[in-house]
Amino acid sequence: MVFYYFIFESLSFRSLGKHATNTIVIMNNGQAPTPKDVLIRSLCRIIPFDGLSFLGTNGKGWHDVLSKTYVVDIEKFKTGQILANELDQIGQSTD
Image (cartoon, rainbow, N blue to C red; front, top):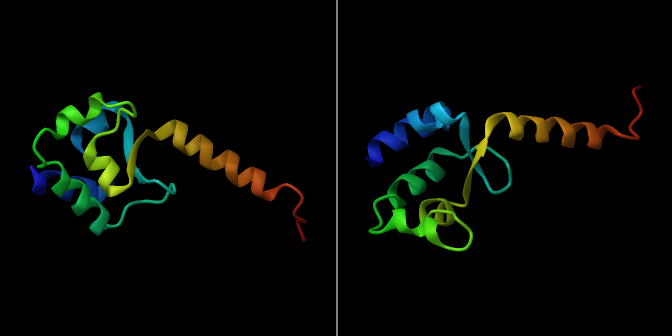
């Protein structure tokens, strides 16, 4: 299981399930995870009762909390990146 997630999420930041749901793994700061981050995330999945961690108040699994990652909808994430980039460009000269 660790090998599966590490390979898929290191190469494309997506597992087969994330391809089906059109989601992607990102870091808390919005950047792409490094292979080290993906390894931490993958290893945390073998923590006993990790699946029950989604029942908490924040709805995040321990593998996301401990690796400082989020799973986000790709289209919404890209739209947010475009808007943030456009806001950064307001008031800048085009020279």
